[in-house]
Image (cartoon, rainbow, N blue to C red):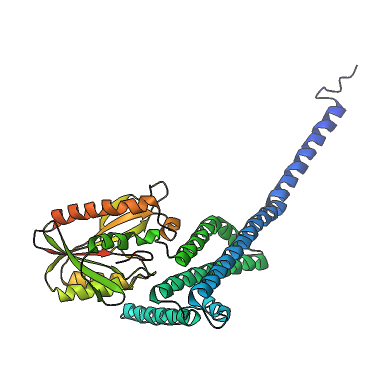
Length: 376
């Protein structure tokens, strides 16, 4: 009897050939699915994620704009509908100066930022004629948050539609990868808008909070743009403390103020201590304090340049004390951990000036940040 499973059997040969052909067919289908349909399915999944995020961004920017409009009407008591002017501000922009010749670029930036700030504040004042100066500052910050959300939405929509139009998986993949961080920042701006609408202190106000504690019950004077200064003593040192004028949302121009104070006390200032909030790394604890060297101030860099330039000219060391927090915590209502860090920062400053200066020396302590909700 013939064994059909014998290697010499004709049927066995047919089964072996059939198995090989089937395996080749499945392999070919897998390759086609992976490199053809698989990529398209993956791209479609990415686009669904981006589309969902874009719709959420649109909702967030609408909420922020509605909040700004409602607050302007409640506080500013406008006689005309402020919506058309608000729409104009939502589309405003700043053209950066030519930087092919870097000489003088800082003064160019500084001038443009001054012009932009003055115009923005005047436009907000026109929309809210019934608001006082502190309320105008708060409304300006609220409109700025709405403007930022509108700009984020426009940029994300642009790249989404561009990737969809060109069928570019590289644009879509990059956008989908960045989307979680973008959404986190957008949620932070919405929280900031609510804080500005209610005039609540935010996490970025840590620096002004510390300076305010040092300036309490001391005679104050205004220097440069919206910066208040007071003198006190600490560990037998003469302390010149400064912060932005509050309680409206304001950061002032601390670079100009410190530069002016250094020139006013030419050769008498032994050190500068700058206090500011700083973005923490993931895994770090909110409210942790660190010490470092250099001008602790954010922004485009014009204010830091002025401080560094004058400090270098007079050979004055610049020290920094920072409190760690996330971007969300920095622009939303101040958390308890950040508030409690204020007194700890003052103790760190005391230790720093005892170690790095002598009794009788003059020390400048600058509280950097948005002073909304923090008085003098």
